[in-house]
Length: 285
Ligand code: SIN
Image 1 (cartoon, protein in one colour):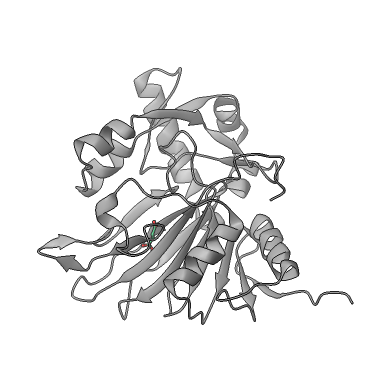
Image 2 (cartoon, rainbow, N blue to C red; image 1 turned 180 degrees about the horizontal axis):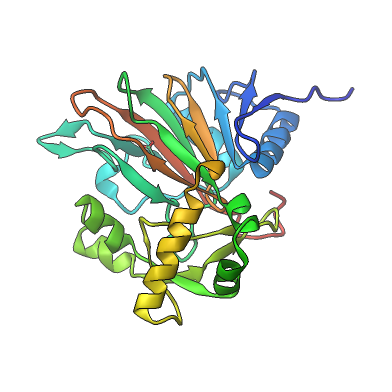
């Protein structure tokens, strides 16, 4: 019998798709999983509406995509499920119990600052404000493919420095001394080749990319500013306005994201798993 293909509704002309009729909780058949993986590779961002995932469900499904990373910010992890990074403005004793607590957050890739950056994330909405707090995604495969020639000549074959310290300074979320030691500034290619698809995507972001290696500081700053403006053009962006029960699975190798401001009088709580590439390419994805 031929498996029934999942129903998909594209979110933009180039990337992002809503996947209909899939429940991420409980058992997922091998055919459905294979299709979700293929869609994730093809579209970069997958939206699953109306989910009712337990913490175990979210962790279990995410593990089917790849090994999970435990975020170094132990203070933001869920008590019972450390694979879940809490993203929330909810506070205990005056301190936010999660990452990215308040307001707007600029464009970034999850964990671009690590030697082995994440390949995916699954963000699941538990509490959302009535307005605002939307998450925008930008398609870096298309941004690279359409890059003007003078910029392409600069980015190809070059590295840039990624800085978690710079990100934390921007948002006043400084890590402790041990965590800071674990996350020194690091160089990655400005163009990331996807480990599964082989497609090339721009891999810089205003939140964490501080310098292009091999260029004088003023030239590096000017090129980065031009690239940051380019990669955030409307033609590359999908904006997601959250509903309760939405799950968004994105590809960190070829999309970056940012968040809109929202009224801090309302609680916002999301759980995020962060998915690593398979350590061994011999293991089929
Ligand atoms: C994230 O950057 O991982 C979360 C974005 C959001 O809070 O919508």
